[in-house]
Length: 270
Image 1 (cartoon, helix red, strand yellow):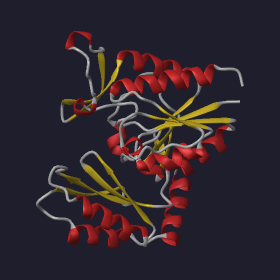
Image 2 (cartoon, rainbow, N blue to C red):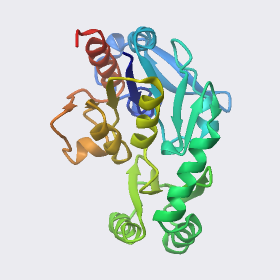
Image 3 (tube, rainbow, N blue to C red):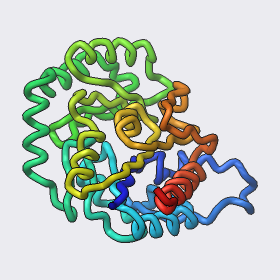
Image 4 (cartoon, helix red, strand yellow):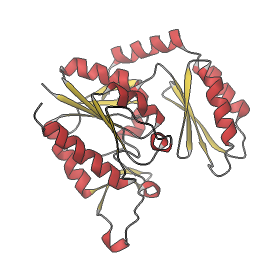
């Protein structure tokens, strides 16, 4: 029976230069592999050791990249190892099968959103009206499913984020602050639902997951076992659960540790 490994990407397996958190002397820093280029510039990295671990994992399990990124943003990532058959984009809004969005799945998602939460237009209007131009750099809508702001963190008023979270909660939406981005996402739009669909299609008898943010919490709780790094929203909140392993490593070395632990679990007798 196959094993599914559904892992978040940004700040879980891949890291921007600003998120690497390399604390050792330069001469002892790990060799890095660039896995994403954007506008002709290197953007995301993993250690070479992590790259080999991911290649091995792709041969041993059904590896499912699981991200809040849009399909376009995901497709510029060039991960090592076998090309994944399945990938989850837009926080579960799109299930890619061999790189193509499954239209039946997407239609199911849209139906749930229409039934269970306030429309995107209402949330977008609220963000545009209440967010302060002093600290907002960009307003974005992703795949016509959710919205996010790119902000200057040092100028951001934390009280505004809390007020937004309460406003959104009453309308069936959730709010997540990740680095310089504030996400407003409909509650039914989840990574876990898409992971369960992949498990159904593959007949997997074991699901493993990893992630660092509030938007990954449902994915981690839905898996049989989960891992979170020592950084990110979940670590900041000291979030954990019985089947979740909270790792001490931070930055790019946390990604390496997650892959090593996951691969060991996949290879262990069940």
